[in-house]
Amino acid sequence: MDAKARAARIKLIAFDIDGVMTDGGLHYSDDGHEFKTFNVQDGLGIVLLKRVGIEVAIITGRNSGVVSHRAADLGVAHVYQGVGNKRDVAEKLLQKLGLTWSELAFMGDDLIDLPAMALCGLAIAPANARPIVKERVHAITEAAGGHGAVREAIEFILAAQGKLDEAFAPYLAAA
Image (spheres, one colour):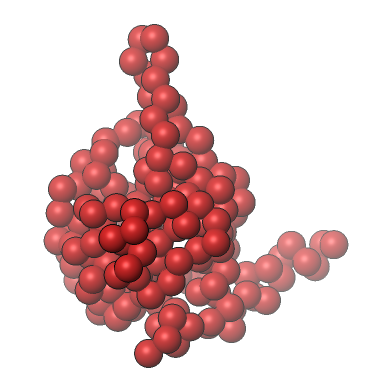
């Protein structure tokens, strides 16, 4: 089955943070406060997903208050931080939502993401993902993490489901 056919079945998208929603860089102030840079176009993509009824999750290996703030800003209800086993967390979330692995898209960039990506219906990697990850996914974005990769993946899924016009409609009506 090709990536477009897989994308047509997706009801939940889970994103890693570092290297996917950000460029993977970690920035610290002198007093130890962490900073991350997120792409606003990626953020609007998450709003588009929610508008058409696709669930969104964040599953990340690190704990970060910055991630909590970004998730809250975007209204992401399913946020899991400090996760060592992303496959187990994804499985529990699927059970909670009454979904199957084939209905999950997972976007990751490194080894820790592979166990969940191996089981999901659509595995997506950003352009900056590790080569071992790129070898094992269904789709690779042209954009790198933190530079529009999330939005690119979202629009691919929305287009495959015929929901792109519905998602864009509120913005185009005013134009």
